[in-house]
Image 1 (cartoon, rainbow, N blue to C red):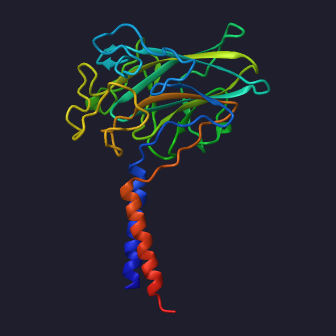
Image 2 (image 1 turned 180 degrees about the horizontal axis):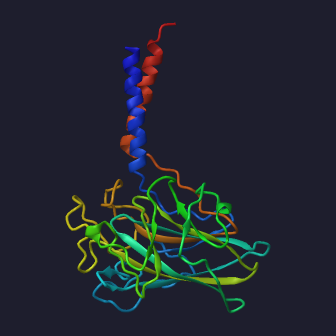
Image 3 (image 1 turned 45 degrees about the vertical axis):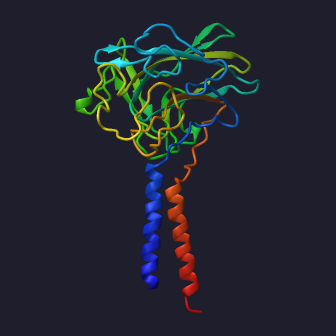
Length: 303
């Protein structure tokens, strides 16, 4: 009897662990204590641009809240430009710049990152998007040299994004289908139900103001001519009308969620805090029943 209860309890704990691994639905990373969030497409912050609307591509969508504005379909790809501003506090020079992405039903392409010291009216050289260094600790900014980009992931060990040179393979070949306008290297997000991205450490000037800009493109089932997710998802349709920090359509386990967002943080120095997964109701019930079983087992043990 006691052996059977131990086996059942172990199975419940394993199931709970598996549920946590697949059912995250994590919100965007929060700025480190020493920094601030400078861009959030789902919830725009002061200083980011465009702040409300953009012009052009009226057939695809013209509002900031529509991820199809910067879209990719075959070789006809378009990228939307974004920018954000921040200031380096007096006494702090080393700055960690982090971009984090979530695109449950599709892929983001990210590149052409530039940084300008608006106080001195000079351009700041950023590392080229030629290599992404792996970091041994996702919460350790010091593991990344100032001359490179490093990988950032809310959940260490879960699939992350990857670097692409010019053209990612077409969807039937297993790639994202993204093509970068003008060629060159770009980053493709790999996160589902959580955020991943890249970061770099910069030696900036204390007291100066800066502006960072980048290009973003997207491919998903709503992209004109895209075969992506044409019949994969069932239940509540995936909506691409607005950016969303988390999945709100009832799916919190796979690519059929509608969490689509990009955030940027700066730390002086430091990375965004790693997320703490929130257990799903079913997982909580499973854990509760497991603990109850343990209590029964303990009460029935002979003295």
